[in-house]
Length: 477
Image 1 (cartoon, rainbow, N blue to C red):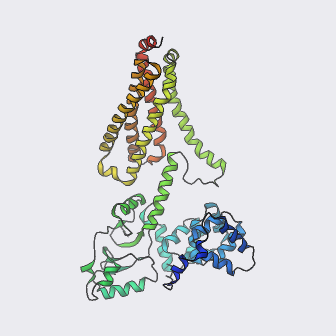
Image 2 (cartoon, rainbow, N blue to C red):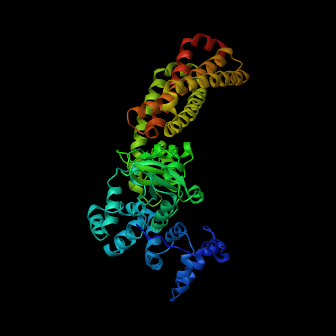
Image 3 (cartoon, rainbow, N blue to C red):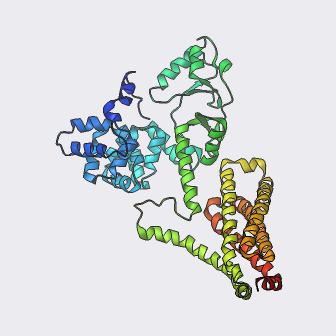
């Protein structure tokens, strides 16, 4: 979409090595003071020069510390291409205010200067009416490309791909291919590979720029193209796309439709953002926190989301408490059991969290589907067996040193051993089952797994204590 802006070879290195630019860091208060000092002046020439040397992500960081009037003044000093990149970096509340503040003409100008994937991301922040008005102001070709990207479901390869790519026919000569690359490069930046297609547009392979330049001009593209760069279906889930990039060390990858026609490309920087978002989302969901919550989310809204999971956690806690209630008479007679109960439950919960984290990670990477879920569960059971024996013996020795009671020492050893096995079995199987039921494993695993280890630990400890109650009482007395 956006016209590629050619620069002098010395311009970018000069920008990167500018001492004035490097004298400030993102968290350096002098940067903010300097920026505020420039804002206090009526002349914007120096302010524009200073802002033009900043990364849009750093500008977005400082927008949070400025008034909207100051932010708007800085925003207008940027060119439309940088304005679009800045919009995507802004905090949601600030971004929403800017999108409401900008006219449809201004937004159309900004969107028209972006790469297709960035343009689609900006339009995705708008409601249907605003989106339609801005699309109507774009060039027909740009409108078609962006509309096509917006048509793919969120979380698929098609939704994050860019429509700008360089392709050549497999029947072309190297000379013709290089000419084609030069022509298309004005609309496509960051060219890593040249994709090769047949006359129907179907993806056939790729060529590195280096090999294309060094090959004799009369050579046919088909003879020098490589085929190991696997095309990604447009409907592939973004997590699977990220797995492909990490597994095969992709820098860029072609995206094809159901017919195998090349329709776009995904680059590594797109995947880094996806992986960061997915990791943050999974981490928050494991704690029952919405992925959309930020420091500026209203307190009442954040509390409403969190209280749902806390209520479920409270209900499951009552299930564990019912086990304790059932053995209340045993605890009254052997009071030291009340001190040992948190140890058994806590160790089981920690072991289950380790197993669950490992399982969820490998589910996200797609490793479990290749290795088989049974193998994973049996592996974790083996680890639980070893850890259960080790920790059970160690805990038994500590209890014996404190109480000099053999039966009580054996009881804590047995309870820890049993709960470690439960932790391994539940911690590995629950995430797998949730995924098979099309439920995000990170959402509810922790609550259900912790409840099972608490109930299992209490049952092992208190159940065996009731069976061995006469021996326990005689030893304690």
